[in-house]
Image (cartoon, rainbow, N blue to C red; front, side, top):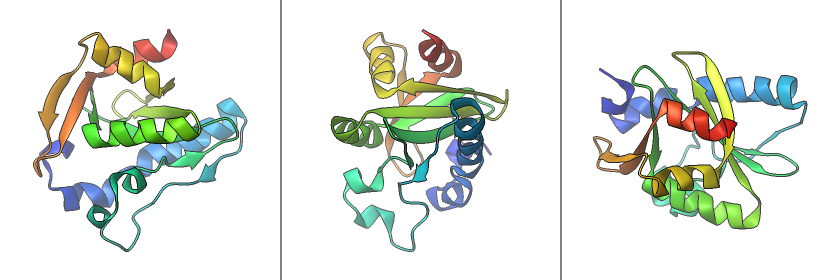
Length: 151
C-alpha cells in the first residue's frame, strides 16, 4: 500500500522524520546556516483541534526565512494539501517561506520559495486529488518541482 493510501493515523507515525533529518544535514553542510525547530512535531494534542494556520506552522526558522520540509517517494509525486498551501501563504506574509523537498526514492533534494509552487499551479502543472480522509491536495510531478527549484 502506498504512503498516500494509508490512513492518516498510520501516515502520522512516519510523516516527516526522514525528510527533516535530511534537511538538518543540508542546512548544516550545504547552507552552513543554523536552524531552529519551529513548527509542531507530533504534539500530544489533537492537531485537528487547532486552527489551520497553527497546524501548518513551518517546521524550521532560519535568519532570513521559514522552511517547511516535505518528502515524497516512489510515486514521484509531491502532494501539498490545499489548506497547508493557504496557511503557508499566511506565514510568508510574516517571514519568507521556502520548502525543502526530499525525494527518498532518488535521494535528491532541493529548496524553493513558496511562490514557485504558485507558478506551477498557474501554469497548470498540477492535478487535484484527495487523501483517504478527504483532504484535498495539489499533486505536482517530481521533475516539475526540481526544475522550478533550479530556475
